[in-house]
Length: 353
Image (cartoon, rainbow, N blue to C red; front, side):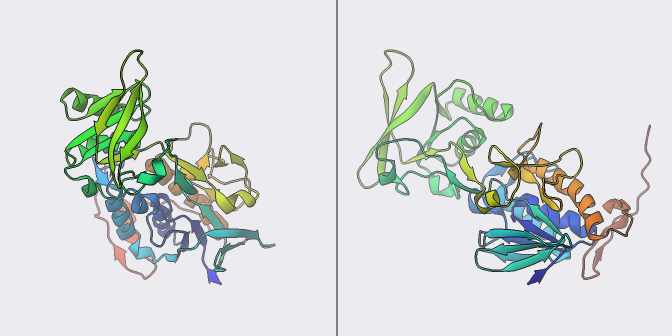
């Protein structure tokens, strides 16, 4: 039995940052993740994908963000159960919880935090007759290492952030980048849409809107795609390519969490965002992309904020007889469980009102 203050289900960025916020309050954390290493999707699916909405980083690769977070939480000596999926949740009479994994590892904690991102997931695949034939032979549903596409002709399908971001990023790597979207309008960030259209005008991205990839051709490897257009009387475009990357998002699945008695809405966990991000089960919280509430933004940034607010309420659960006093790290520094302390600079800050 692993005993801790907080069990965190999901070791992605939001789960890792929870360790930091909890550590500042002297709360011990243990993380469970089905992947064999921390980092979640950022480490497993797109470690080389640039992220633009992390404060103080105009741009940071997803894998580098994970590395920074792991460095940040080192003083707090978190525990890990990796390569195992959280399977069962049981609330005891004293209000504490037992979380058991699919391999039988049991964890005892006073609070449970679900930070599982999208949960388990699989890519949404386009319906093309011979798609499976070319999987891993020119067709991929995610970009793990952009260097794979060095000096190659790449076609990307999709209209969201991932499609736009990778089309923009690969212009500096691939010999040719084509972006295909079935509408004129994109669903991604406005800045990314503007960048993609600017690159298209400059001839660095071949942009096909109101169009779809409808056929794949090749022998043992992918050699060409056929793009069909919505305009009447326009002939299909036959395009020689090395790689086709359809980026239509991920189909999230909550898996065993569906059986825990949580209130679910559109495959996400409903929480009380007006207070503490607690679920309908007292003592069980959900933060990051796995939760939902009115006005929810599925950003890593939002998950970080939710973690900070939530941990203050968990402190009262773990320490019901103590009074919580908010301390700024700029004044008190950061002290780990081993007693090591990183001192903050003592500076006088004048507020202008």
